[in-house]
Length: 248
Image (tube, rainbow, N blue to C red):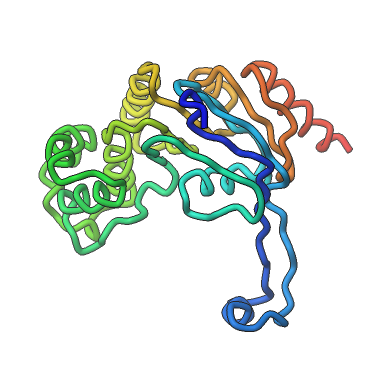
C-alpha cells in the first residue's frame, strides 16, 4: 500500500445474517439449515484515505457508516473485498467499551491503554494529561461502577484523544458532557487534526460540524457509495439524495 494511503477499501461488502430470535442465532452457529434473512449493510464500496486527510461520512441510519467504521477498527470483518489500515487507530465510538466496572478510573486508563496497544511506560507518560482532561479529579481513584454515564464518557474520550493517534475516528462523540466540556472536546479534536500526520474520519448528522472539521465528504445510501468529493458538494449531495426520498 502507498505510504501516503492509510485506509484503503477495495470492493468491500458486508453481509449480516438476521435471525428470528437469539435462540435461532445460537443454533445458526452450529446448523446451516436454520433460516435467516440476509442484510447487505455495505455493498461493493471502494475508497482510499490519505495521511492527514479529514473525511466526513454522511448517510441516514442504515446507510452503512457504522459498519464501515467497525471494519476499519477491526470490530467486524468484510464478507468480500479487501481493507487495509496503516496506523494506530483511536475510535471515539462507544466511549465506555472496555472498562472494568470494578477498576478505578486510573486503573481503567491502563486497561484501555493496553487494549489500544500502548506499553506501560507510554500510558504512564500520558496518565496525568488524561486525568486532567477528563476533569474527574478525586473520583479518578474510585470504582468506575460509581461513575455517572457522563463521567464514564468523559474518561473514555480523554483516553482516546490523548494516546497520540495516527487515525482518529469520531462517531457523534463530541456531544460528551456540558457545553464547556463539548467545546473542550472540539478544541482537542482540532488540535489533533492540525497535525498533518493525523487522519480524521468523522460521522455526524450535523452538517455545520462536518464543515468545521472536514474538507472531504463521502455520502452513503443503503450501503452504497453515492458521492466522494469536496465537503460542500458532499453536503449538497447528501441533502438532495435524502430530500428526494422524503418528497416521494
